[in-house]
Figure 1 (cartoon, rainbow over the protein chains, first blue to last red):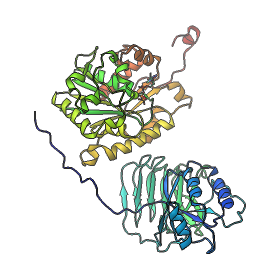
Figure 2 (figure 1 turned 135 degrees about the vertical axis):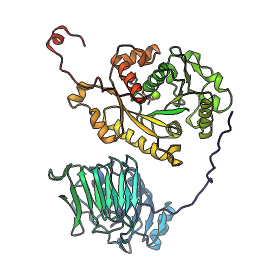
Figure 3 (figure 1 turned 180 degrees about the vertical axis):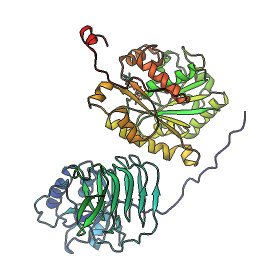
Figure 4 (figure 1 turned 45 degrees about the vertical axis):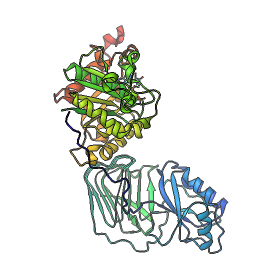
Length: 256
Length: 271
Ligand SMILES: Nc1ncnc2c1ncn2[C@@H]1O[C@H](COP(=O)(O)OP(=O)(O)OP(=O)(O)O)[C@@H](O)[C@H]1O
Ligand SMILES: [Mg+2]
């Protein structure tokens, strides 16, 4: 019997840096009732929208004298909606202490992740319809310079995610439902875009998304997102389209 | 040279075991020495479909753990001389499948001169399914004409492209084949189900075949005879066509067009 060729064993453990792409949950209020109502309305139309993404609580907008939110409850609420909060950032010493006690990490001055606004400043305003609108982005501390371009030439399949750090991404094959393309710069998909596309992931509001066939589950630019519970305009649905931000807060979808 | 074929899907109940049994039998009927392995540890289905459940003494996990040798555990098929079944264990959990253990068994089958090893994957994307695809040379992705099945197939294709040995070692990628099963031309025609072209457009891998929905499959599995042996049925013919295409022959698709029943049929019934 010929001897088996042993593959060279990989070390049991390797360390590499990673830049986690996740969601920023911006707290404008620490008040239980306001948070509760807003979470319910925010997620009502798209309860399965997030697929277990990591999330960070951004505390920078909370008033200085804000009491600590009930972190455990808040994390659980978001978890049950597919977001996995694991840390707080820009928290006062007091908030940081309570967050730590609730098992959250305390980050400071990290590069902002795509933002969603979790609670309007109390008292909660009219609940907005959720499918359409987008939420305001945190101005980026320092949008990364777009230099490196990543090129993907195989289909991106459900469950796959690619991230172009500090640059654009060009995808030459289909982005299927359940797949995610993320770039700090712009996203170009020369094929059907049926998954999620998040451009300007570190806050670059001039980033754009281009595709030859728009049928996305979600598009986002610098944290301002739009889902497609209601189909996009007939002029762009399943057609070549460009997606950009107007006035830094409004997603615009135009025929290409 | 041995070729390892993994039959997988992500979603459960789409026809992987039915397909594994028929593809393995079809290859054996063509003269290839073939083994079919049940990776669905804990459930055990393949031996029923192959009609050898009463002859199971040792199983895949016994061989992995060294309680039995391969020779003792392989069950010779009733219908084909050069086909052997390696059944799953019903009493263990999926963790009993270690990567080294699976590799050892596959290597040994290779040394015994098997031409094809067909791996019947469990549903899901967890350990058992990953073990079944780790050593694949080719993958048959079984998909039903419904959105959730297509989505799961897409997912499993991504996993093949990241977790197979071929992918990890940067060798030539696993060769992927799409097999649409439980296809009803009528329901596809009426828009109740996806058409096979819809499915292929999304998954973008070569189409190996379309197996029609048929009661013959249930009858076959109750009798413990793989559907490919049900001579003259569309299901058997469609599996034969798939084998032929797998071996590089060209055959037009059959059983995919919906024909409205003509007047005679409507008057006198019949299928
Ligand atoms: N072409 C077909 N026409 C009709 N019924 C079919 C067909 N193929 C499979 N079935 C039926 O579908 C059911 C599931 O089939 P099978 O056990 O092969 O699926 P599976 O993918 O192996 O399931 P699991 O994920 O549980 O392992 C069985 O009842 C089988 O008889
Ligand atoms: Mg099965």
